[in-house]
Image 1 (tube, rainbow, N blue to C red):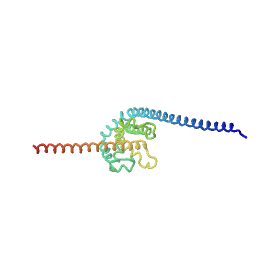
Image 2 (cartoon, rainbow, N blue to C red):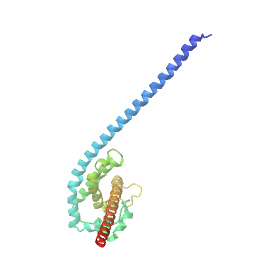
Image 3 (spheres, rainbow, N blue to C red):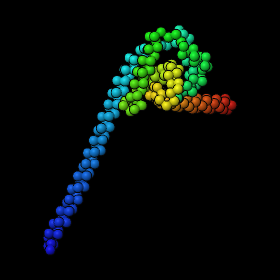
Image 4 (tube, rainbow, N blue to C red):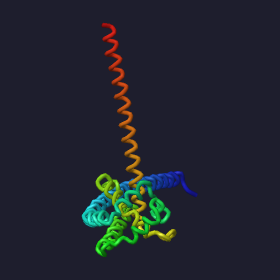
Length: 228
């Protein structure tokens, strides 16, 4: 039979054990939270560094070489087809989007007498852009870090090569080409249009306020002149 003193000691040990377990669990939780925050900080830093690295890759492999393609389009009078094609917003970039131009225009574009150098360059640029976009659509790099610097050129480049992308995806309903290019384009295009809408609304509000202020000023002047 346990004595009162032994019972007291056992109860004390149980309390100490419970407190110890609680403190240990609390410390583990704190360490876990701090470790997770550290991981997030390191991960975010790595994603920013990767984005900067990709920005240089994009400049070297896309920006610096696209002018050759654009000049070839002008020489063959294909730039007008591209402008016409992009008068409407494209999202799927497959044969369904080719209705933006006539069948004859599509055929003329496909049969355009590009030099092999230009045809290969278009293909290579698209492959480089697919690699570039893949890193952002899969969360490997932080797109916010370079959006402001590159998004406008990226959007314009995709639109310049949009017919090539659509032609490549004819009959590819299930397994499409350049899916990452398309996904990043749609994401950045939506952001760009939304921000432009906010800017336009802000300008409109500012213009309305200016008109109201101008009318108020005229009323005040009329009152002063009338009182005189």
